[in-house]
Length: 95
Length: 392
Ligand SMILES: Cc1cc2nc3c(=O)[nH]c(=O)nc-3n(C[C@H](O)[C@H](O)[C@H](O)COP(=O)(O)OP(=O)(O)OC[C@H]3O[C@@H](n4cnc5c(N)ncnc54)[C@H](O)[C@@H]3O)c2cc1C
Image (cartoon, rainbow over all chains, first blue to last red):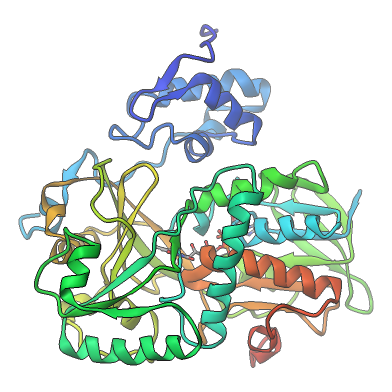
């Protein structure tokens, strides 16, 4: 069992979201990575969850205990672009 | 089997608003949502609450009434949904657009709304980073922005456990009627409920839910793609969009458009978020329910964005996403009881305006259910206006 992450630990560094805020989102009804993201912004920053997703999954697993499976906790929906890219490149003809 | 006064199907912005307003009126309500709160269109969208993207008449009246309610709700609801009455600016690329826009603005003004034409100089004062070669535009200080999924949470959190029970990850599989065709209950994949009244707030899925009872609810998914920027600091201060947006939305607004834009029905919109990102949109297509973000559409939206805000060129896009608007042919939502099935209500089909119209929609449905006089005339929103409303 992974160790307990204290409430004041910053989980999402881009958006500065703590483990406590993530637990609050779970109390509000979040049962998956996307639900946590919408309620807290965790994973909405520049890195789009590439850094914090595993920690969010871990907290979900711990808080939801038997009710959660890796499938139900899920991933953040993979989106285009794979990494940040300028609008100039996206709108250019050199795609 | 639990019993409720009203069961609301669908936890998007429309269902959560209905649930909130019903509980405020004293009803015992269950909200049943097949996924999470705001997992449908209400989290795959922009979130401007505007008058200046509505048609004069019933459409604009809904938009205006909702903004007044948002002002109140932003104080009344404990959960902050980032309401900001920052105004909105439309910009015109051609003289023809300025001419058509002037007619539109005059029609709104005749109905008493605060909106005015602005010249290129005033535009550059309002939004300094805007391209300099535009012909004119119009501005309204009544329009506002907010966070759409936080609004859903705000409606739910305020009344949850105080008259509202929420059932997430629970899919409605049937609405039970008695021999007189009156609603008597709701079946789900997790069990049954007893109720005399149900509201179908399924958005683009309202037709699927309606089919369970032989209803033909003519709502089509009209897709739109949005590009989200990195957190950048201010690019624009309010919702900014091109007048061509009105052409893409309404079949009766006519201006010449670049054929390249018509291909994906792309029109420029830009919206600041509370996270200091901007959301760049968008497109309008009937391509079913898939939420793929096609590279050609992304390409067209990015290009169009740089046309109006050249500064975007060197800014980064961190994600692209798509949503489907619940479209009704006459551009008015269906907010009505199904006369032939007492107790079966529909509140769906708000197309590109569901966030904006949510407060007043919830209020109107509550007044309908309570048998009170409604704040607006409900005639334009009746289900019976639909010709083939029953499946054979
Ligand atoms: C790109 C884009 C931009 C937009 N911009 C704006 C804007 O600036 N301003 C504005 O006002 N509007 C805007 N909109 C429109 C707005 O997002 C929609 O009108 C609104 O979200 C519709 O809300 P809804 O509650 O009707 O539908 P949804 O949010 O889709 O809610 C319906 C819910 O019903 C649930 N459901 C379906 N079937 C069942 C079932 N059998 N059992 C239980 N639950 C079920 C679904 O899971 C879903 O959560 C935009 C839309 C898009 C796509």
